[in-house]
Image (cartoon, rainbow, N blue to C red):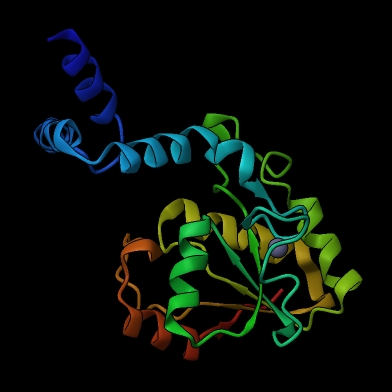
Length: 196
Ligand SMILES: [Zn+2]
């Protein structure tokens, strides 16, 4: 049954999928509608070529600029910096935030070779005057790396702009990805100014 073994091994690499769930999924596929399987397979195969990073904010998009950057109804004076696109989606789900975003796709991790250049922090700094941003909300996770990254960005931005950090409603060491809607909304409302 090597074809099944190979599939289960591959599926087990997906975050959150253990071997048991992968096996259950494989058996489900074995009996599933072929049209569904075809669509699913193609969806996975073409995901990376169809979905690009928005050159302005880093959000994923199929177009030149993402939905948020092109949405004229959003508050263009506020910019929220997040680690991952999942964090952006979570903030969006709360409906509490109407501004723009900047996705870092990571945090500063010098030991892993991730420095300011790898995170594209220069592009972030340039956006502030170029787009007339009045407030930057640093919404990196309340972890050691997230806090370090926030402090670094705070220093980098200097006194040119108001900078705030999400209030500590989020559990320490807890990721924004797993925070519930109410917690995110509360930490957004209670955000604190970070002095330069
Ligand atoms: Zn964008």
